[in-house]
Image (cartoon, rainbow, N blue to C red):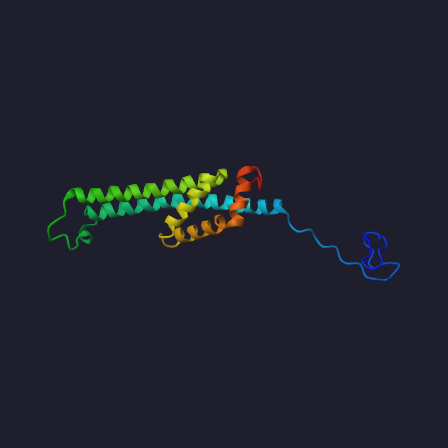
Length: 180
């Protein structure tokens, strides 16, 4: 280290220059490098992956509960509570109700599988996992509260030039970042 005024060599920790009396500039801490940014971003990707796994389980349980309650309601298992405008009028054909339940079941399973694939791809830090997670995030924007929040969080973490270049570096080095 040298004095910025006279160029005199300074001893480490010396507050002023002995020759000209100029105060020594404080040592500037180093700017975090790319390793720090990669480590921080890897932690975000890991948390996002765990959130997608949890959301897949939540979606499956919510879908099963909703379909079970709907089946019980339309099968008149609730007694007088199940009577509605269709109780006195012409009934829709039996196949219509079963078709609706099957379509809803397939849509729940597609959503759960998409969330699981997105979570697994993010966990593995693969490029296809990033693409699937972005697609799942866009589709989940329509699901109130949890789906919308997860979709927005996913897009904030994965979209943008800086984030895409960090993710690309993570996918090349899967062992970067926290190892918890």
